[in-house]
Length: 299
Image 1 (cartoon, rainbow, N blue to C red):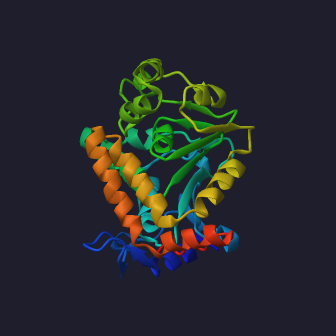
Image 2 (tube, rainbow, N blue to C red; image 1 turned 45 degrees about the vertical axis):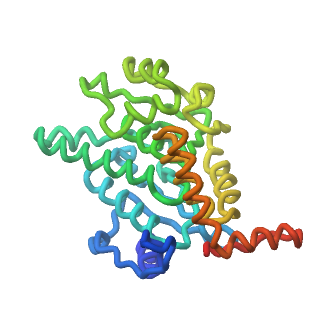
């Protein structure tokens, strides 16, 4: 299915939005997407047994998927679509360009910007990656080849990172007399610790997939070229779980780690309450008792 048909189909679905009653159904109109979809960021919805898994494909081969204004707009648009679509259970971000995940910001485009334009672009990128981190479904970064600067920051904003052994990751911004500005100075130390993050950012050095795994930067490191297969394997496992439970688990973890334990436990209780009245919880118990595979509907 082409990107435009997928976008149109997703726009016409019923979605969950936050209201006084959790997960009440509403029909949404995505005003942001009145503009044409980006040619650089394409959305592909898997079908049949993989229905519920969505792929975001970065496709700007002439610039090694460098993030410019148009690509950033496209990324934000597809993330909005996924977040509003009730049938999406897990999303994978991958590259359609061989040998590269994302080379970072488009520096050629940036050279033509004045100071205020640079600030606006970086703030927009930071906001988009924060939205990616908070998107309601689990996200998996599929890293083959180069993931530098904003490309690594994009992966850091995902829930799970899977790379090929030949992947090359880094935050080289200090070599350009700037710092990572889209979350790199904050998300990297939260993953690998302050000392390692300082080493990577201060030196701007590149690390391969095996080293990234050893320091906890990625969840899985597989043979070169097999990152997508591994990501699809993980996505399929997640796709079989209770959708509301997965969303509530993500919310509890993301928000809980940013506060004290007592407050986090209150948050966990609230998230647990959200699943108590779902049909899926009863279906899970019934399937367990009947020794069969559960049929979850997200309700």
